[in-house]
Amino acid sequence: MEQRDFDKDAASYDMKPGRVKLAQDVATSIMDAVKLNSDMDILDFGCGTGLVTLQLQPFVRTITGADSSHGMLDVLRAKIAERKLTNIKTEFIDPEKSVVLKNKYYLVVCSMTLHHVKELVHIFHEFHNCLLPGGQICIADLDSDEGEFHRDKTGVVHSGFDRAEMRRLLIAGGFQDVRDVTAASVVRESSDGRSREFTVFLMTGRRC
Image (tube, rainbow, N blue to C red; front, side):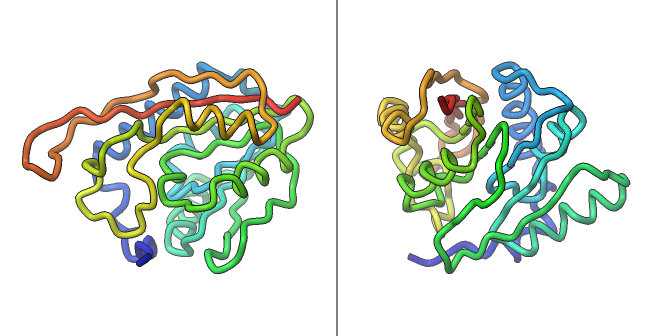
């Protein structure tokens, strides 16, 4: 499958108000679901330009933004330098290799990323392994959308997700207390030219 060139998109990625609003809504939903505190080290997997990362940053000890796009990480690093932030780290994930997460975190967040990831079982295994005992996961992504959300489907592996199936995968991956809420909705033109509302869920779980 052809991969989307996120490096090419990086410079203009934040220019869409709807994208920024979605990140704000997801971050708010995460903070409603998890009590962040200044002792937490957390991971934002698939951080992009840091739209969610920067929302969570003031409330935790450290946050690591990990992404497979150098261009996206360059934009995030520029924001970090401009704002003189000292508690954000960045990490490049090689898209040509299997993901291996080596550090330990109290929380892993992953927003609007998994629909680009084919091997979900492997990713959930890595999320589970990198969490400290009692650590939590927060996944935000599209509800099943029949392939209508993305006009350009380059690099899109999943047409949203069925929540019951996502819960099953998380439980099979060793997570407990799996719950979900609707975190955001996005109104946009679908492929048939009509306006349609798409919903984004937040699913949480805990490593025992």
